Length: 221
Image (cartoon, rainbow, N blue to C red; front, side):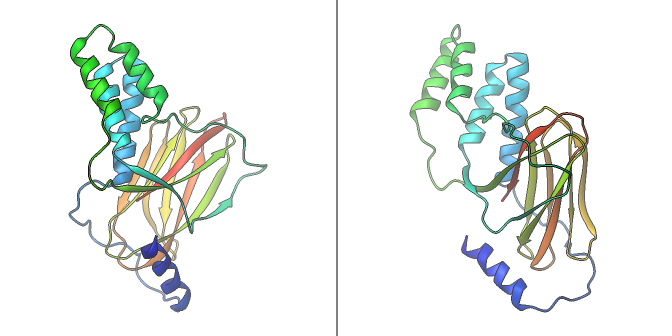
């Protein structure tokens, strides 16, 4: 929180400069909180579709291993026509409903039952990685932009996790308009991972390229 506020203040007080794209070479760093939530969502969807309790168990563990906090300092600008549709977001792999699904699938396997009980009874140990999350929705053919302050020389992760009702695209540009990351429209979660060269504002565009409305989560580290 304090780091994000410091970045915002430095950007407000520093004159804008014409520079090269705000992108540094990829830094060596382990996957962060946004990557973990994306993987949890992918495993949860595969496990739910296939009725695979092992995938569900992994998804729940991953999701419960991240602390989720509401986004602060993110500016949202609607880019499409009409109001934001009132749609539900994606299912939460760390929810009680996900655990109940796992319990139902593990009913005939004593070993999985034990693992499920341990998962429900034990709290994660130590300090958990933190993901920043904002919730929104888009009608078919609509798009919207988010303005995010990011720190220089720090690996940034930005993900879009849709509800699966439509295909969503993700792109990130720096303050000069240069594209630093783009992901094609898909129903699967999309992840951008890059390292800014310096403190700066980045514009994140989420586009619904399908016909149906879709709720989504915008996730950052």
